[in-house]
Length: 115
Image 1 (cartoon, rainbow, N blue to C red):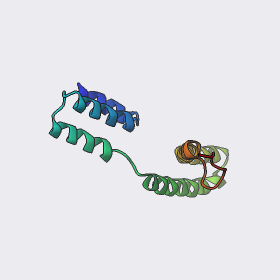
Image 2 (cartoon, rainbow, N blue to C red):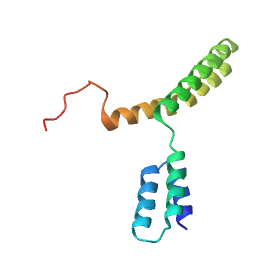
Image 3 (cartoon, one colour):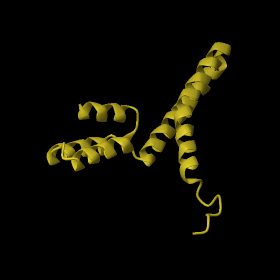
């Protein structure tokens, strides 16, 4: 049952909650050390590093722009399809950048609160 809950949390991107659940189950004594280590490895293995995500997203966006440029002279339908391709690749990339900026702020963009 715990493995299913962890799988659902990982599918929805709630890696921090999945790791907390594993630690809570181990602290409560309901989970063996080997199983807890396997679940921790599964959680940490499913996390994509930000640099890898941005690199992959940037390459996908560049390829989508190239396809959009090829479809540009093919009329209104080609422009619509090209725009949809570019939008579908740009949305996750810019969303991730927005989330990163909203969580910690852009570097050197504001004055920190006094301690």
